[in-house]
Image 1 (cartoon, rainbow, N blue to C red):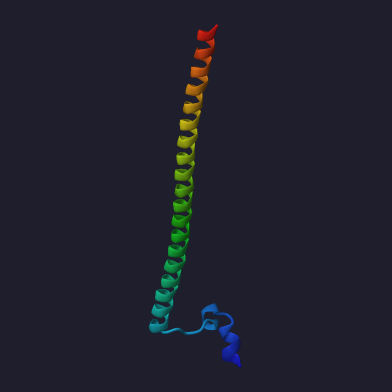
Image 2 (image 1 turned 90 degrees about the vertical axis):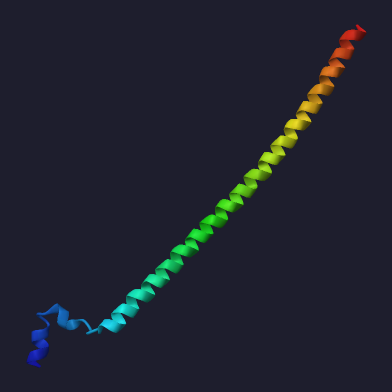
Amino acid sequence: MAAEIHSLDDPSALLPDISPGPKTANIWFDNMVSDWMVRSRINASLESVQSTESAMQQLIADLIGRRAAIATELQRVNAEHDSVLVAE
């Protein structure tokens, strides 16, 4: 009982004694899990960037189409305007 009471003065006595083998395995597996989690976040970010890039490319294509439609309509309106001026 005296040894148990004495061990309360030494906080390290309360910690389990872990041999180097489990410590190494613990560090290795912790790093492996951490690496996997970071890789998962990187892949999720990459997918998000690729999705955004695809949406931007679609938007650019849509704007190019609208620009062409507006240019065509402007040519039509200018031609109509010119024909009205010539008719007067």
